[in-house]
Length: 382
Ligand code: T4K
Picture 1 (cartoon, rainbow, N blue to C red):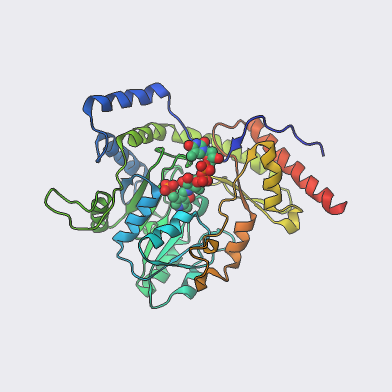
Picture 2 (cartoon, rainbow, N blue to C red):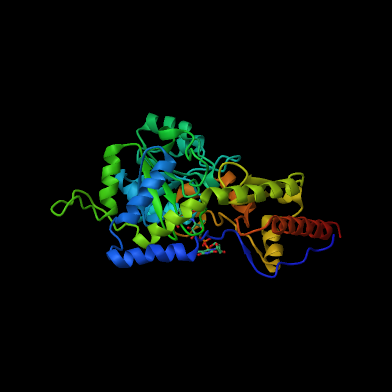
């Protein structure tokens, strides 16, 4: 098979949406007039209002990034000792547990959805377990109702890392309030579909928890004379909030563009043995992720990655290494015996997927994948 022409410039997995620069400069000018730059100013409040309206469930508080929101949300749940978590996630998920002096205990994932397995959670519960932290990986929802059942049986709190969840067409959370657990986090980092350069949010259906979360976002301060809780600096600046408001207006068009590109990936790769698309075609348009099974495809994920890179297709091994293999956590007994997570970390590859790509770019990417596979198969038979 003839090799497609390599791309002359790198194609990345994501590219942040940017509003017309004049619009952003107009926002900046208004900040120059008011001198309000942070501490829940008018842009922060407008963004919070707009996001709340879009999410349509629970109470949403805007934070300065997803990781701080995770730490703030976990802290508000008053967890102790052990928190059961998925190893197949971005390190921030597990680091947030460790940052609070708690012990992350790993449960395996479901082999189909790649989200934390309720059965495996059940096996890892000890008298020291106080909570569960699942990740809606690539926007695929955890089995929130099965997890709620396990949590209720054992009196555990539940938090979800929904860093990849925001950006679907409404409703963002199809299960409504019951799918939020006690609290759900969102990330608005520049690499996310919806972004505020850096940013995040917490959503909870519990008004008391929401109140506590809001204080903890601002050092635990309630008023000039009252600091009822611990807290950190989780406030989003006005510059970031202004960007978020502008980007929110562009979101639905970007989702449509991504879905059009996703259909091309699907058409061109769907009948290829050993290669499947595990994310990008459904409600979530965060990542387009291929799963490559070496036995059937004749090429491994790593071999494909290494053949695409020099051709300027900069795909990413989300999520490798597994968090349970990070030295800080790998000596914990729960870091072993996670076969489904170990396989997913070897087989998943995030591909370029954003509105800056054209349909013909995606066709060429797919042709390059097919060429790489044929090269690998030829090498086997030679
Ligand atoms: N939980 C989960 C499940 C997460 O995935 C994340 C973050 C978090 C928690 C924590 O949320 P935050 O605290 O970040 O809000 C990126 C992001 O930094 C990270 O936010 C994200 N997950 C993770 C999946 O991806 P890297 O190291 O892969 O990013 P980087 O810099 O290699 O960017 C990827 C590509 O995006 C680049 O090759 C080019 C493009 N890019 C990137 C940036 C930053 C741009 O075009 N412009 C940019 O400004 O971690």
